[in-house]
Length: 268
Ligand code: ARG
Image (cartoon, rainbow, N blue to C red; front, side, top):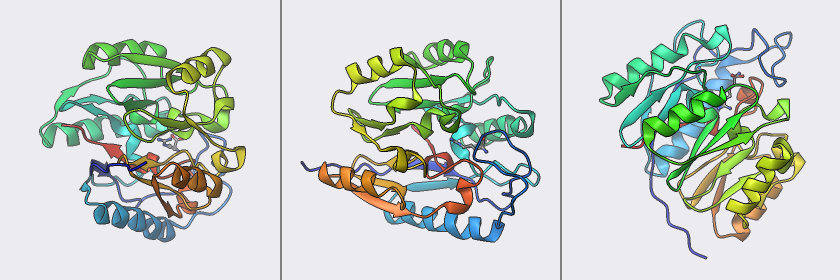
């Protein structure tokens, strides 16, 4: 099976002010130290991989005091030149919403202010024309209907049940327009049935790979950038004709994020 890469346009945010000083997901341990310069070096490596793949990489200016701003995926959902803004669950991250919205407006996107709480691409993944949307921890189910109206696209609402996989992008990886990889145990039974029906050939990842946020990956349809520690996922991708590219973001994992969290796709 030969896979076709289509280079993406993405938005990233350098982790200049990254640290863990509060706990809003089970991965975060504010009592333990973080190394911001190591976070920056690891993030640089991801940035470099994207450039090598021919991606158009845009940068938003990090803001002092917003520890989690590096997780750009949460900044909104951008499809057809329309940017639907984020409205964060926790007060610590709330100022990121307007900061990302301002960036979208300045970059020429048609901006839509959200009415309901949602964490952007963290909980909403675009797969071949439809939007998979997570609920249960961060995103208000009413935002799913809002997103369907804003983009005029089919939205599949999925219930997340495991606190370690609190965002949809920690439990689902979009591989291309027709297939995904996922962790079944992160979903309630009705949602598992929906996913089985929609994606009968999906890659099912091991608990070990999910535990290093292996699913939190970014694909251009051929090259799949993943956590280098997700070894079995790497093998499964290679077996299916994808080109897995490993990167070590151990420092950003301390905040509960990985490759995808650092990446917001811009679809014109
Ligand atoms: N510390 C951040 C939070 O809990 C991590 C966000 C990870 N982002 C993602 N797209 N999953 O909000």
